Amino acid sequence: MTSADIDGSALASSIAFTGRLACMSRTEAFDVVRQRGGTPRWDNRQFPKADRAGRLIALASGDPQDAEALQIRADARVLGATLLAGTMVTHPLGRFRHSYLAPAQGVILVNGQRVVVGDGIAVVDEPKLNITAEEDAEFILVDAA
Image 1 (tube, rainbow, N blue to C red):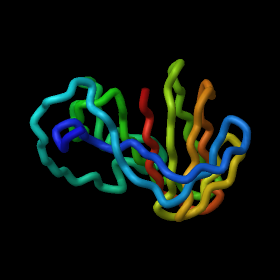
Image 2 (cartoon, rainbow, N blue to C red):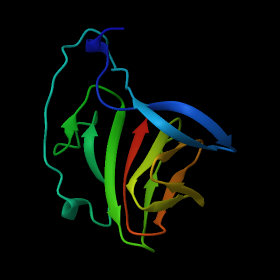
Image 3 (cartoon, one colour):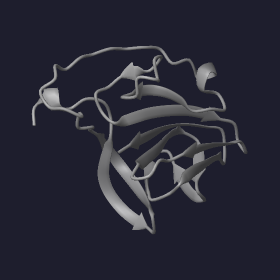
């Protein structure tokens, strides 16, 4: 695999399984592209907190419908949100999709599992994610095939 075969962010790390939800920490980011041999590209964009207040927005995506997001060549989406304490967002997951969430600030509950800054949670085989802020929080969610 070359640098041209890696694009975007997916996540792998040491995993401690808790049923279908796996708590993770010390994340590394890799998403293998849909087709090998592409040319690496770099881009940047500002994502004001106001845009993601109380809702998930696409930060980077392989889905052409996410026109405002940074484009990646992978079947994945990197979403971000900020939530006030006690508020919740729901993210539906398609069949055979995997997700990873990590808070940058605050504490979140993901389908009832508590996740704090410095940790993350990997999710497989769940139809949707209910993400609740236990305290004011900011987090990323990676949704990948």
